[in-house]
Length: 123
Image (cartoon, rainbow, N blue to C red; front, side, top):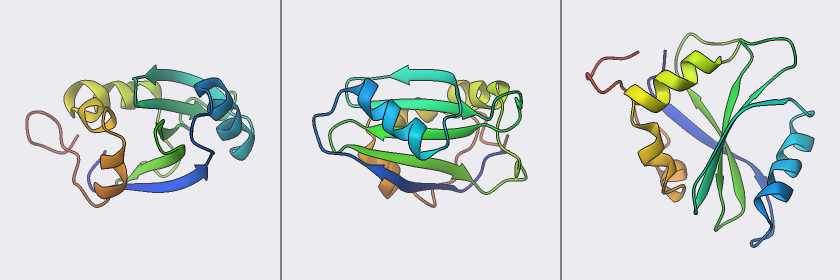
């Protein structure tokens, strides 16, 4: 799980919209999935969205609050059906993903970056 990361711009909003409005726009663009996890920073937000009643269907989205862009974050791995909450916890705790997210402009420039666990191995 994890490996080379891609961050694809999915939704572009006018700068200055509230985070609640931005989340609403993302939910509308992704057919109104469930919010399984929501983490916010002054410059960014991370959401794990799930198809209702399918805990293995998660997709990870990062919002650049300054530029008003939602990025869909994916990895070159074998998780074709999507991620679950445990996968997200591993990404957050062992792969230092939040360091990248705290500066969301890095998401766009980090496409192709290999995301590894803190032990240096692919998780």
